[in-house]
Length: 163
Length: 283
Ligand SMILES: Nc1nc2c(ncn2[C@@H]2O[C@H](COP(=O)(O)OP(=O)(O)O)[C@@H](O)[C@H]2O)c(=O)[nH]1
Ligand SMILES: [Mg+2]
Image (cartoon, rainbow over all chains, first blue to last red; front, side, top):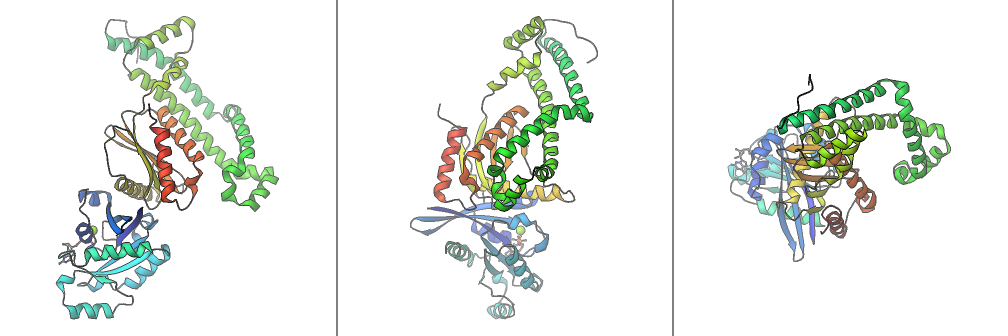
């Protein structure tokens, strides 16, 4: 069985969304699509079990925009949201509560994963203190640079979407 | 075009002669149409029968067309009150008529251009002579061979409106293979972003309908939950565009499954087969 779902990457500018995207997908399109059109869509097939394939259509968006500046149409029809923040920059998670509420409001049915990225740049103690200080639960910490947890992130998202 | 060019052996000049003859008649026709549009009385003379017919049609299949959206209760009320029905429908009708006239004029101009641009053929020459001899308007004769356009459709997709997920697709045998899912996603994104950018400030919801790149054309037709995307190669006149639009409309009308909020994997396969049958039938 072939199933398709739309997943979006969101979060502040520079947190590593595009890097996670390209870690996960060998892209058919050039990066320039992202800068010229403002969005890039790619596909990756995840094997869920012997007879189920999940085709993830992953949307990445360019720019430094705040959540509520992103065109609503980007979010619509989305089954999964990956919200990325940068473990090294508090300004990328200071607003996390409001951002998540905004997303849950427009997409009440969607599965949300909150991701702390760039873990290669910080110590475990630092990670722990950042996460414990968050008003929401962080689902995973990743490094787009080393690739740590990137496959796991998308796999767990895929499985969550199949429930 | 100031003066009638001389006749000569040169094909270009022959074409110029024909262009002159053709445009002369059709320009008058365009002017006539313009006069009609600018004169309210004249316009209503042409348009009222269309409205009347539309109202009759609306009454007949009102519930088919609007039933779901309007809801049974409201629908009942509307049908009971003809005045109310007219109040609701008039602005819509006005828009439809304006669009209709615009399309007709564009079609006419487009047709002339197309015909003049096409290479000189005996068939056309024959038409022309016949037109001269029998006094039949040449444009009427040209209408007859609009049917002979070859299909240049490469791919058709049905794409879910917001998610951009491809519900169904079909392709010409010689079509370049492309990943439909990525194509559908990108297209949806471009469409959404474009519409978002251009609808700022305006009140009407504009929908992206056409993308042109080199000799490739992407024709979009939006429906409630989904949109059709047709990839074409080569030139496409307005009347061909309209023909395609009609075919897609027919398809949408026939395949009620498309209106379901969630379309099953089996339905997707079924719809792909229907697309194939409709747009790429086996010879
Ligand atoms: N060290 C490190 N750098 C990263 C990581 N992810 C992204 N970057 C860098 O952070 C910058 C912004 O990344 P980008 O993917 O463009 O962020 P986006 O704006 O969220 O798409 C780039 O210079 C990346 O190389 C990571 O996990 N570790
Ligand atoms: Mg980016």
